[in-house]
Amino acid sequence: MSPAAIARVEKIKSSERWVPEFFNLTTAIENSRLDQTYNTPAVATLILLAEQIEWMNSNGGMKFSAGRSADSASRLYAWAERTSYTTPFVTDPSMRSNVVGTINFDDAIDAAKIAATLRANGIVDTEPYRKLGKNQLRIGMFPAVEPSDIDALIASIEYVVNAL
Image (tube, rainbow, N blue to C red):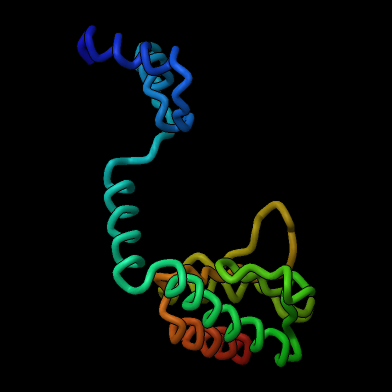
């Protein structure tokens, strides 16, 4: 960075202007001087974020996005409640996330094996929260996920459970 750019960064830092820590260029400069990196979002990530927001807004904004996730969540949680070997991790329906659903499995069924089998067959990122140490799967139901993909995932989980 040029001396003028560094001076501008320092001026912004000393002002009362709030900047999220991961966008704080002072931190980036300090780390660079130490030949270190700082975990900031890549430009490609920011471009994808902008495109995602544009897509959501062009489809109806918050109402569309929230409705789509709610549709996916209702499919996942209804399945977990009616299936003998699963239960939603969050028992109170009013407290459940419509974005990430965590489903507990009966101890007789190894959820880690289900996740590994799914991953080996191209269905990724269903592993549970590592720190919880529970026998469960974690399912993303973000607005970009087609609700019908949740149905397909449920069918895949059932297929794997029956095959194990």
